[in-house]
Amino acid sequence: MRRRRRPSEAGFTLVEVLVTVAILGVISFALTESIILGLRTTDDTAGRISAAATVHALSSYFTRDTQSAEEVSVTDSDCAPADPGVFLHLRWTELGAVGGGTTRVSYALDPPAGREQDVIRWMCTAGSTGPDRRVLGHLSHLGAAAALSASCDGAPCPTEPGVPARVTLSVNAEPAAPPTVLTVRRRTA
Image (cartoon, rainbow, N blue to C red; front, side):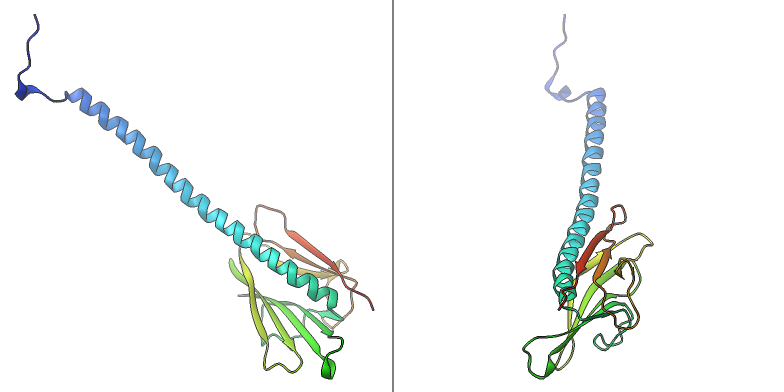
């Protein structure tokens, strides 16, 4: 014969409560881990998107500037105001411009070394009041390799203004991926 429960004895047994607490612990652990993984992935993805946008902007300006360049060097710093992160200088004369129309462009990293760097394009034109500073993007890298490096005709760019046929820019945006290489042939007269 079964004993009937009184209303005051209604409730959960100790075993039921312990099983419920254990199940809730497992579920909360799994949810916490998935949230942490999601946050880490979001940061990585944002960094990759930023690096891709920087490479895209850089390739757009770099291609046009290099094709126009009459002189290429790494030390001709008459445009970027004492920027130690400058790694490439280009100079050309605008056709049809009054007074010669010389344009000078310098590419730089700010700061020159470190894990977080902005890619800067300095542009000076004849008759302008000062250089135009444009941030093309941001590189965040963990490797020891330089974020950006330039070469001319397969060798280091000259310290004195020269006229290489090809200028190559190597962008190390992600440590785990190979660098993005932008090679541009200069236009010849």
